[in-house]
Length: 260
Length: 250
Ligand SMILES: Nc1ncnc2c1ncn2[C@@H]1O[C@H](COP(=O)(O)OP(=O)(O)O)[C@@H](O)[C@H]1O
Ligand SMILES: [Mg+2]
Image 1 (cartoon, rainbow over the protein chains, first blue to last red):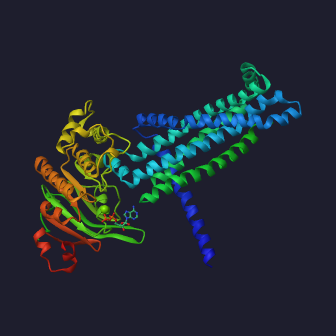
Image 2: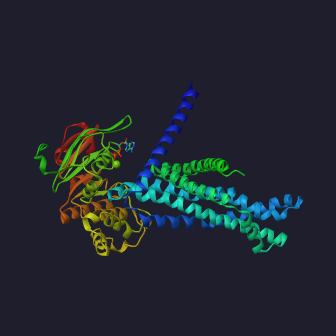
Image 3: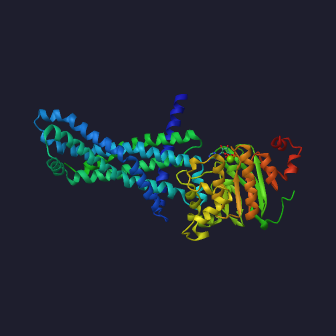
């Protein structure tokens, strides 16, 4: 009996959370077209986000490219198919690994940052102070941040992909003496629009999800310092889950439209 | 007690305010008014709903029922723009100062100036207004510091300066001296009084600091059991026989 009621409570709060998140999303779309556009704050957020995560994305991207190539090289060698390396690397990185890894890193870096920042602003009444100062805090804080992540994550992913492929090139250059030009030539030859377009669209959704969940958790933060921790933490957890879900849906839809 | 005065003279008039969060009934028919030039102190236990009341007053929380009139305008019946215009006339000093910690002191003070464009128009150079507000609280040298470089007392003063920069005619103080040491508290109280004199403001002061209440109040309201339980001057209330009232002055 006790267990059943506990499961009921968990389900109830889960659906309540989803409902609230939907309201939050609707509110975003309602307010995003309203004046004023807070363009300056948007730019500031874009700059901050890029600044915070560029280095992380570069390092992880590079290592992923490097390791991925090192790991798959022996297998390809066995089949005498090392010359396929560039196209294999580029397709897997651009389609899947690059976006999801970069998005996960940004969820940890940017999403939790937003959750903590807005959470502490809520707890210390800074959001209230903003409202009293004739500013719509939802527009100023939430809309700008969601737009900024939606805009910046694709750029970061693009950047991460490029560095990843460079990491892969380094391995090929050392082990197989492939020149830079030849390698990148093969990379671009093997890529088609059906590889690039869906993955780019996907990254916009990734960015939106990171901003949305971070803002939702922070903006609705419960009182007290514990609340801020929970906001930051759950922002990362929920965003990561959502990212995989979006990824799955994106691949699913892509497969319907782009039949191979 | 002169509870029933001419209604039109009250610059703030709250009637029958009710507000609950779920099952937690915080305010259950709270009434008060504020006359021009008056300092009203509101006392109540921690968690009795003082902050909720003052947030309803400025439109940060929506009351379940009751009317709130500020300068004759019912705030539930006006548009967001009108409400924002009204808010330029009301300064709000938050319980924890609520300085924006991603902005410097100067930017903190500029924020309301740049946002409430109706009252001042588009100001190009805010330096003079910012300096004047900072000089009022004796912290002109802190203009380029960040909030995390300030002590608690300094933060409270900067927050006060940010409140004053719009030259409001009403100031709402939410526990202006809480978590400050006694000496700093006294300084803040003196500052509040000098501001009152200089700009001829009316204020509502929430506090449970009896000393603060004694020096600053023209009239006091005790918020007990979700209503305006008792009302009167400091002297009247502090000599009251009611044990619930006496509890505040021990
Ligand atoms: N946003 C909120 N959601 C739920 N309960 C709240 C909220 N704000 C205040 N409360 C509750 O209202 C009561 C009064 O709070 P408050 O006005 O902050 O007290 P105080 O008189 O100390 O300022 C408390 O019991 C608090 O838990
Ligand atoms: Mg309070």
